[in-house]
Amino acid sequence: MEHLECDVSPLKKELKEQLTDILHSIGKVVSSLDEVNTCLLNEIEHISKRFSKTGALASTYYLNCFLSPYTSKYREISRSVNHLGLKRQGALIVIQREDSIDSWITPGILLSAEITSSLLESIFVPGSPLHDGAVFIRSDQIVSAANILPLTERTFPNQKLGTRHRAAIGLSERTDALIIVVSEETGKTSFCLNGHLYPFSIPSGFVIP
Picture 1 (cartoon, one colour):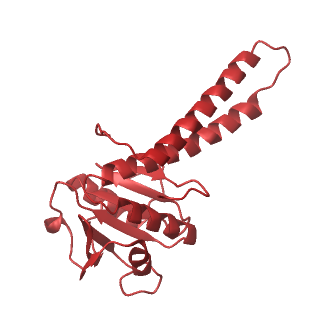
Picture 2: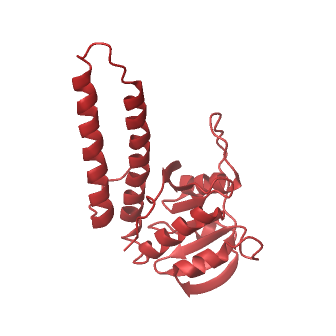
Picture 3: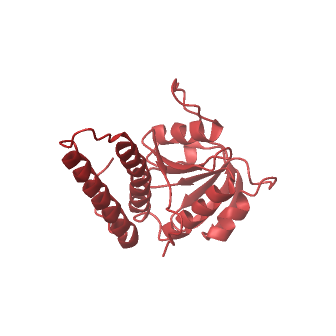
């Protein structure tokens, strides 16, 4: 991960609160170790689950940090991805950063439209002619949809990766683009950067400002 100076205040506040709460719970577990006949397995399992959830929130925070220098519409993108995940609508969204990606994709349908969450969601409606392939975003515009990305040639023995995830990794291995993936099977969301996938989620009830 690269060094960032970022302040997405609502997410940062939520992240701090969750980490502080987990730290407090860990402290209670450590203190309880001196007690006789105390089983702490349930408490430790609970902390582990909360830590995983906090990790996903941290990824959401850093996703916005990575996007904000390259598009002012990062909240629209995050909002649409959240909705797509809840509806289990598969999606693949490429955000260009410093490197040009034109030579690495097979161009799709030219759109040249301003980014809105509703437009992004409509592109990935199942059965839509633009549903397959990736949306290409540069700055504050959706440049095109139904673009084809290069697939990674790496193997992942411990992971079951579909075409969208392999395409996201493939492009991020060749450029510094940030690629967002929504799984059609599970609704889980992740972003890909420098050949690595990072799961993220927006907590239930959290409203992106």
